[in-house]
Amino acid sequence: MKFDIMTLFPDMVRTVLSESIIGRAQDAGTIEVRCHNIRDFSTNKHRNTDDTPYGGGMGMVMTCQPIYDCFQSIKKDFAEGERVRVIYMSPRGRIFHHEIAKELVQYDRLVFLCGHYEGVDQRVLDEIVDEELSIGDYVVTGGEIPACIVTDAVSRLLDGVLADKECYEDESIAGGLLEYPQYTKPRTFLSREVPEVLLSGDHAKIRRWRLEQSVAITRERRPDLLALHPEAEAALLPKAKKRRSKGSET
Image (cartoon, rainbow, N blue to C red; front, side):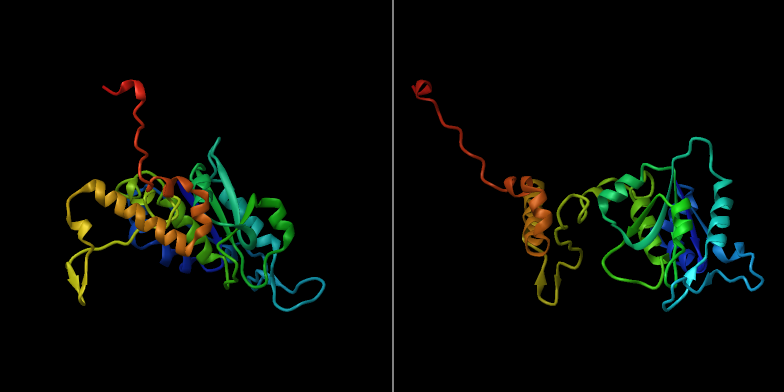
């Protein structure tokens, strides 16, 4: 899968996405991440990419021309029939979550536009952008970190990025509930013990304990998620005993 990120700060993006699992996925060729410096496409002699807003107001607005030309440069690399989605990271967009990551993984290429300053001229958004996404109800200084978050979340759903599907299918949110607590060596730390059930070797009991913990944590912290997955609590209910019919008694 290919990721193209249009930004004024390509080094910020490269620093984040060149490390750990996503960095190794790039080295292996499983994903390709390319950063495009919008400033390189400015035709202004001072290489400006922003200007004062019409109608007044504080701050500066990113101008159309460098962004549009940057996108046209990326577009030359599109393959025939390639499924492409262009995303503007913006507080106005729909809130990004796991189901959206699963939607985006169906594309061949994602192109991100990272805004800065007071935003981007609406006309270029109308011209090139398919949708706007937000990572939450707060404001950050630019779209670079949000674009990295979406790239990371989508990449790890691709075959070959993680060692096994279980690495993401059982995690918080991905499975519908928040994740159960995890433990590793040593068995005792500051007088705190690893739960005995995890040392039992009884995989059925371990699975049930983990489900109980996930349900309890989700009920406490994200009851809205639990309401969407009533089957999780139902799985913890004792199985009803089958009633013997009168005619079957001997």
